[in-house]
Length: 478
Image (cartoon, rainbow, N blue to C red):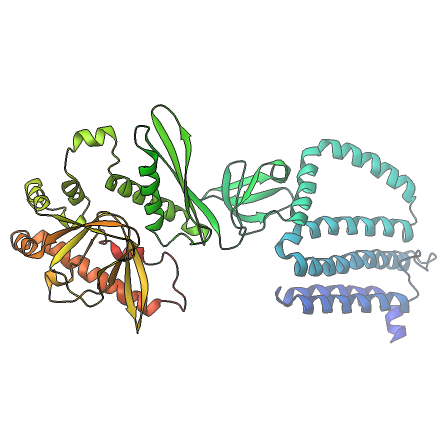
């Protein structure tokens, strides 16, 4: 064996290197320990081959009289240094991956480059007997020149190392860098890559990210801020606006209970006052939907509290019941005269906070239209009730026995003080006979709510998921 190795060092060494490459690519990347074990084993065998033939990577080749054998031996010793550098970078990569995950990749690449540079210098000094001091001096001068030429690039590299070490953000975090907001998809040696909400890829240099004002929306986990701003004419009393916006915040289950949502006055001028309503959601994926919903609820609750913009008030000089009918979707097909007729017969009823409006399984002689406030709708899950959603101004309840004989599929209870308007169902039944579109709208609403109730109970997880069922309260748009 020893004779064969000494006579064929090039063949044995080349075979080990090729075997190492083949096994490395044959083993899947997820089996990191297996890949490392094979590489370390191949390196040990390669070192043993060199030592068995009298070669050492710390000394020149031992056959100066045989030019061919000396060249082969020198080549194998140089390969030993590169092989050692590769094994060391693999070990370093495994350690950094376990400790830092994806964030350690950039540090691994930079340190790997340094290790290979040291290996090349060591091979030149020990194997090839080159004057390393002169080489290092020349390399130092060249490094200064290259460093000055690549100053901005090097700044990005070292800033990337700092970002990966301190980890103000990681891959999959939602962040904002100098107003550019998006999801982190990659952090490489030069830049941070963000996928923005409109699907564009933003590339932010690491040097800019390290110095810029940065907001990380993904920390703390499962709690992300969301807010809207509303400008209201300055002559409207602030207390009225604050109460309406607080009801708007209560009108959605998408917001977390803690920290508590809040409303504040942000700016005041002679023409208008600006208010901010803010809360927290569980996932950044809900942000746009939550903001849109809050804007809609804010407008409805402000309108219900009597806040109107000058142009709107001039165009629609209606009573509150008549204006409310414009927002009820099932009455969209009615003419203005029909709506005027219904508005004259609507009777307002005031409910205090936390009062039962309609029990589960009960029937109502009237259709109820929410004028102001927030109503909670709960459906039965076995023996207990679970909240299905929340309703606000312009939404209706008690429609169950209008189209067919049936009881209420949900329990309705006030969350705030509310004003509801009652419409006698006999009036509506007569209207449905004359207007098939109204009957079709009620039928659609009833079937949609039944379907959503069943879907919620079938798909509901062990714990009720916030904001997953608000659409139950609305007619599905065609």
